Image 1 (cartoon, rainbow, N blue to C red):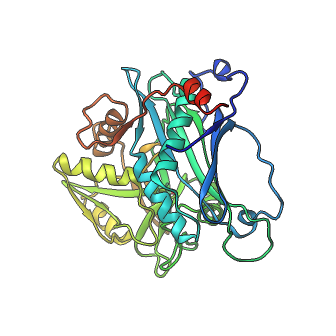
Image 2: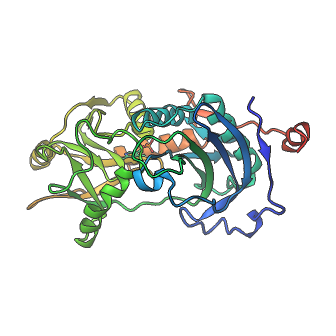
Image 3: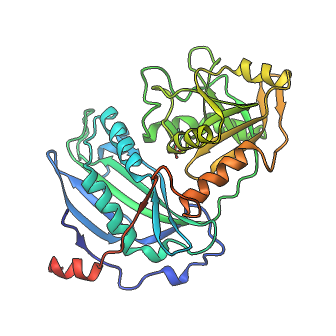
Length: 364
Ligand SMILES: *Cc1c(COP(=O)(O)O)cnc(C)c1O
């Protein structure tokens, strides 16, 4: 067990929140979990009120971008249990990102105990209302106060949370990107690192100004193979086949992606993880063999694509209410929310701990 120091808010803000009208990414919970790396080990574990941090202007993450993050959700079931969805996968992926960015790995103990302590303390923020959830954002930044370009020695790891409403997404219009790139072979596309998102904003802004919702990233060399859709993974449905690009160093290993592949296979679909070209998608559409296109990620789970444009070509897909994307989304959501049997053991139950007892035993 890690030793966490608690500094609680005098009064929770939870009663001020209108849970029936939740915006995405604005209702932060009362507390956050913090751990510090001193160059050798993680320590100084604490939970304190959510709020601004006092940071030096020469903090290395602000200049050289050693910053990685995760995104995951916690749900309240109809039995009033609190379930995290595949948190151990987030822990592993965070460590993979850390290694790529020359940052220290975190033990499962620190990641999971920090997460559970925070969720327990702020459990009233895991909403009771249908289709809502608590979004958790674990992240790590380089904290050396030194203006040299080299890997920082010290780091900070923080987990904070945000109550989120039903993420209803309309089917989206997508532009195949053929000028800009998100990631290239040998690069950092596989890491959930801040710079990847900064690098993607310009092309996305252009696409939005042209009436699209997102860009479909293609390979850096030829703009021929599809890779990812904005910050989510992409799937194409053709009859009994579901095709998605295999993950490699330019593609993030989405946990939703992985879960959807498993679910689709158990439903009898043949899932192919292989190179998928823009031409193959358009050829399938031309021959009437393209049934659906969809994207996966933690925020919206599954989002249908209703339009895809590549230079002068266009695909228009009607949204099927009983289609593969909708069916897979519902199946996965039901598992996450404890409404369907968790046959794959994906959910992680957060057991209530007696915070007051933990605190008094530490003499805080
Ligand atoms: C986070 C992310 C995804 C989706 O991953 P999930 O684990 O399913 O949320 C996909 N692509 C990129 C670039 C991402 O940052």
